[in-house]
Length: 616
Image (cartoon, one colour):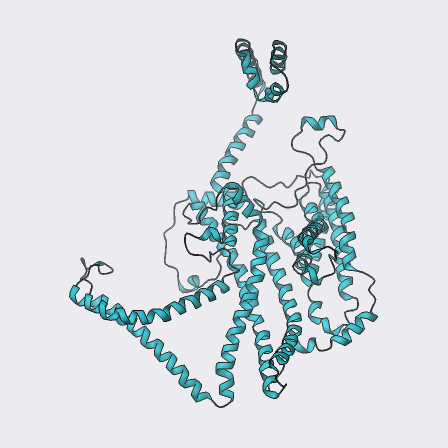
């Protein structure tokens, strides 16, 4: 008799758990806290928006007493931001548990809205907006220019979330023995909240010290040309080093550090969210799977009318064990996929910088930008679905190994298993031997000799044509028989590779020419193109040189230069007035008078007034 997996002991007593939970009264209800936290979140957002200065002073704002107040607060720059990457990653990690509950809205009490079936989509939309507003102060306090106010509000808000989640985690958990697995679910969010508390405290202390020492606090704006892109351009201007063959340790190195490349904030945030959601998904899988297997056992026994004998019990126990132990390789593979996506992003961006990438264009600029917006959410969803399919695939592989090899060998049928396995291997060896014989015959009999002794391969020119035609005729029938098996192998490999690489949206699942039908791959290519157009080091270097030139000219401008500039402006206005007096209809086509000309009829008085406004 086989041993029951240890995870089953965790969920042994559901009835006792319900009785204990009913007697345990919670003083903090996290679902109500999620709703009521909208009040301080909105107040913090309004405060930071009031302190945010508007970059452009519009004419309509002059009539309001607020002036340039109430600017738009940017929570996080997903396009060209390279500073505070891990702080933004921690802020997104703090949202991971609540975001993960959005996938299981039917089973959570966080968003318990009573709505008809047709309004479910609106409920999910409102839930997502509520989660975004709840965690908006984390990002706004990190990105604001008002360091003192932002760090103070961010410290208080993150500390409040950390204390409430920790209290909700610890209360009544020592009595509920059946939810030991779910006890570890909010740990990543707690760790991220604790990181944010420390980060905001650090910013607050640094800001207070700078004020106390009467130091000029400079706004940490994102530079137009970051340091690593500057190093990349300098590296391009240097002579290319001699390429030497890599030794064995360098070839087998998994990751090589590149000082000329830095992952943007969007990629770091995506990686943190993927790992946190995957962690929660695996824990939910370990918690829910035993209950689902028990229900499946009852359904099978009731449908097939089997008695719960030792043989049936052994089969069901093996099914549970296979499902349980297949969790770990699927989770490990999913983590490797996240790291592979990071490496693939760096490789593709460096190719795009050089201009030798073969990534197809996904269409119009609006489609590309919309695909870039969907990238982070799609990557999380594809990773979770990929883990689920990997779990099923590893489960089927473990079933094949168990019932085709392990169980017959334990029952004393090892000779029969070895015989069947030997026949299968012999058939595959014969098939491979025939293919190798065809290659050898083509190499030494049916191909002409090398044109030059320095050539690496023989030319694709047929020799012994009569023998080649006979050889092709007789093997035509064998190739037809072999094609049936090769077709089945191709279908099996496509299914396995499609399930294996579902989480890798950096690789298209469809053949060349049909990549546009793969929504995940189109999202990946759209994100790469948006990042390329906004972070290309050569373009940014050119713009940096232009801006520096303008600043230097303004800095070195003297009184004589200012006088010359004033004379040029007066001379230009005189020529403009002379041209408009001779051609009064041109006044209507000036940019500032287009809307005015549409509102009023054309007359001499209107033209005269527009001319006066133009020359002022």
